[in-house]
Length: 85
Image 1 (cartoon, rainbow, N blue to C red):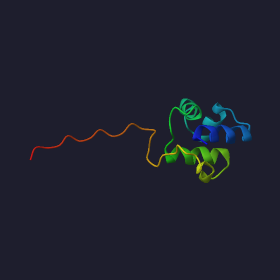
Image 2: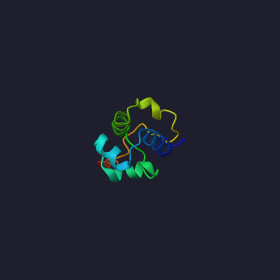
Image 3: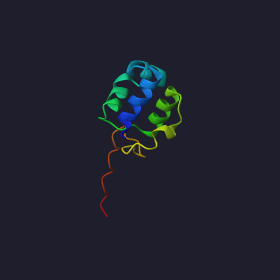
Image 4: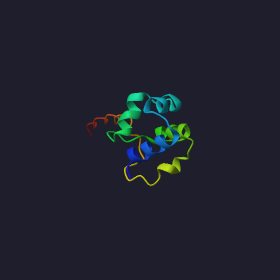
């Protein structure tokens, strides 16, 4: 099961729209939507916020095969140019 599928399942079980979940979690609606359609994977911090808003533990998402351990909400930091030796 993907994160998007699990998120939809838990959201439906609570009777929450994406907008209400966004409001309850403090995550912008657009971000919740892209998680819900599987376009982006959430950071761990976002998983924590969503789980809290849904009234479940983070472990509810543990079986998702597309969860990442690193922050993915933000673009990677630019690499520092290598200095001359």
